[in-house]
Length: 575
Image 1 (spheres, one colour):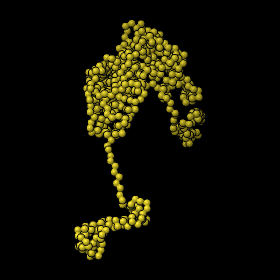
Image 2 (image 1 turned 30 degrees about the horizontal axis):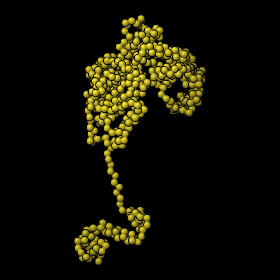
Image 3 (image 1 turned 90 degrees about the vertical axis):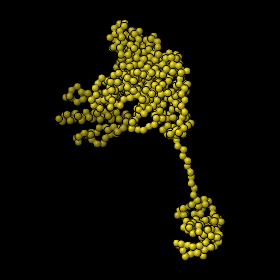
Image 4 (image 1 turned 45 degrees about the vertical axis):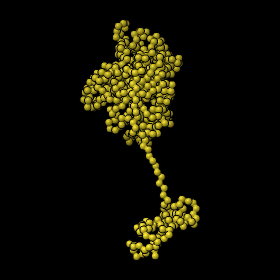
């Protein structure tokens, strides 16, 4: 027993030494020694207690998921996975202590301390490490390869597309060569083109493609891609719900299944928004099975060499608000992405404010899509279907809630991504606004019925001359305008005698002057007497004003036995 105790102390001391080594390296950012012994009273050592950790933030190396998806849809494609990605990235020896772990081959012996010399999965930094390593490897090649790695990799998965099959084949070979030189291996290749797949060795293809020996008329498989299901044969995308066939008996199971719904493009946004989860769970579960059958074309179907127009629709209702974006080129339109938000039922918000929130969602979505598609498509014009009054110069007229959001909208629309593009803001009727489906929501049957409208947009997108010309007059009584307040400064000649040490100081304060002469003194003395008498003997003074000269008048109160009159200055006197 004593040997075990000693071994435990040695082991714990070794761990403490390791922790001291770690803290010594990063003492700028974290840690202090815990002065209290940890564990039992017999403990003769101190473990480290981390009281705070901080690190300098760097640029974000993780590619946007939405960005990879929308670029993935620009042309014919090839997709691959880097085999054993993180296990091929070495750890700097000086930092290996940060990846220490315990291991023992038997319960009869104390565990040993090991340190990883390769990066591990599951760490917070793992995604950034993977992307950094890939980009460093690509820098050794030409700019085209580096650009593909920067834009088309999400974690260790490649999703890249082009309109020309020969270019796809050529780039895939260049990528394999570039990464092989960096000791990375690209594998699990899959494509919607049989000609492209045939150029890859069998051992480098995805497992589901290996089964299609000789290809021929074999149907291409369905694979998971960026959280959605990609049907390679139909070249279409379907939203994913991993647990749609499961039955839920408790609230926690319901919430667990709800969180499994992943729809980065917002394909079934109107259906997901509509439901009241707890009350209509069974209907929703049935709807999920139905909408899982709908899909959208993966390829936009646009000529990348010709300019396109991006149309963004926004709308809001009491249930929710959102935005949906389309690309149009001639008579071809394509659904790009949609974003929806649920209105908090515990908060009372006006429809105009919700519409403003919807407009912000639309502007942010537009800004994101322009950024992600900048090097893939030529977008020369942007149309946001909403009606807006006011400008940046008018923001001061509105309450802070509205003013702040108008400022964000104007700053975004004036940014560099919008600078060289023609931007229009228009109004469309509710029945022709596809974002109306998001704001009001609908069940699966309703979504399927209007799915063509939802995924291709209104018909007038294909004909510029058919755009609706509805005019909307701003309300005369805008409740969001900042109320006008009139401020009045009321001045008073009365001075506070209690705060003045002398009569002269009191009179200076009363007159608002710095110097006082004899005439001012006499005049103000008479005024003060008259004001004081009017306050105490107002009735008697009024009676005296009704008679002429020094006539005697009847009195009462304190002046009952006195004879009073008004002198030539108007002051009350006694006979």
